[in-house]
Length: 214
Image 1 (cartoon, rainbow, N blue to C red):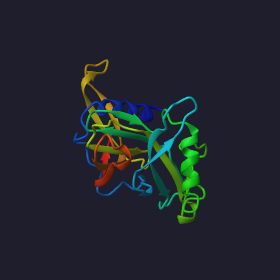
Image 2 (image 1 turned 135 degrees about the horizontal axis):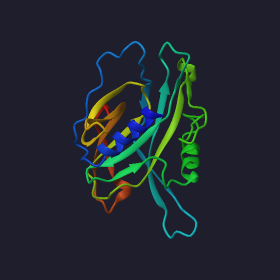
Image 3 (image 1 turned 135 degrees about the vertical axis):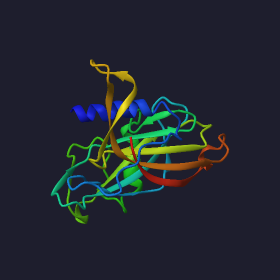
Image 4 (image 1 turned 90 degrees about the horizontal axis):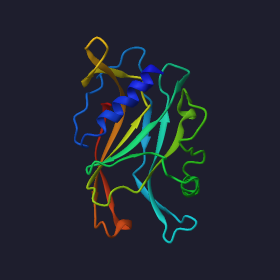
């Protein structure tokens, strides 16, 4: 619980900075007791849903994330923390203000490729070892700032690797800098191109995939 709180606090601290912030880098070689889930993800797509009482459909964005446990452990615990951050300083947590009907539309659309697709409100957080136990998740965000030209999709919970840094301002009871816990997090950076008035034609192109401590 203490570690989880620290990770959440650190994420809150860092998301007030621009998308271009420099994050600490994970270890090149993980320690023997550390793990990272194998991760495959789809290109971001948009989908529309007409809400009752609303004059026009609402737009949402999503990716499909597939995770596989290739570690020596029989099961790993996956607690995803996902955010979309724009270069206009907008921070959007995944699945917040997203009606359940959006996931149902995505599930129907991709049923042939992902017959066991899950939303982020899943109950069993265990990812069992082996390709046969790969799990697929739809990660969904409401539409982001029309003026954004770059976005980062951050996906945490894929690794148990952590780092500890000192808070630049806050002190503990002894006057020492408070400790912040950072977690190895997947950072997917995309360029956004197109006329903001023609939202359905917006093009999103991947710029870079990196792992950061966040």
